[in-house]
Length: 234
Image 1 (tube, rainbow, N blue to C red):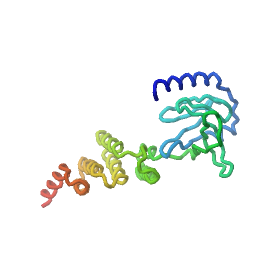
Image 2 (cartoon, rainbow, N blue to C red):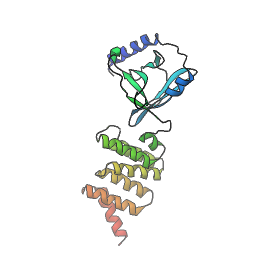
Image 3 (cartoon, helix red, strand yellow):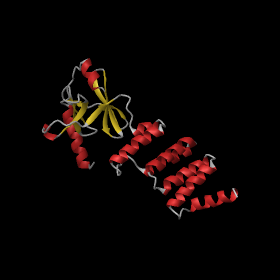
Image 4 (cartoon, rainbow, N blue to C red):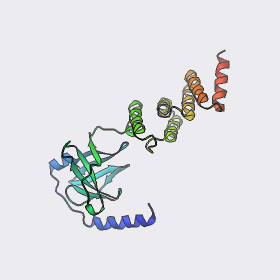
């Protein structure tokens, strides 16, 4: 955000905050609107109420208090968006609808309300549920192979962080997930081989270094290990 845009956002937030309303929410409304809304394939907005006040959790912030405009409508300065609770007339599913500037245009159904137990791929990853995380990331890749939500280098970095913390099994699972997402990546197999080697599994290190070398015949580390492994097993 540019400095000018930040200043405008700040002053807009200050002005609109002065218009924030105190709403006496019914228990029915709280029950219907509380919960988890899918902001993106790997991100959610959590809506909850505390002492009859509306709050959000989003991107690591647990206590976002939006500016309430009416029972169903509120402005979130952190997003610079005005949102409204809506229900689809046919499916009866609930959504958060983004209200465009000027409050004009048809109702849109932007962020679907999902089950409270719903987890994004990153949530599964954080919980070390690698198979479920992989399924989710593969689906994201299927929908958009260039999505910024999946990044080979980021996963590789997380894997090495686990290795530094002596979480070898978790690191291996992380690198295995990366090879499944990027089966043509020499670096993904090289990292997986390295993790197996540090974990004392020389055979799996050999197998994955062979795959890395197959993808890049110039991989010196893979060449060196494969030659040493074959010599020791002659």
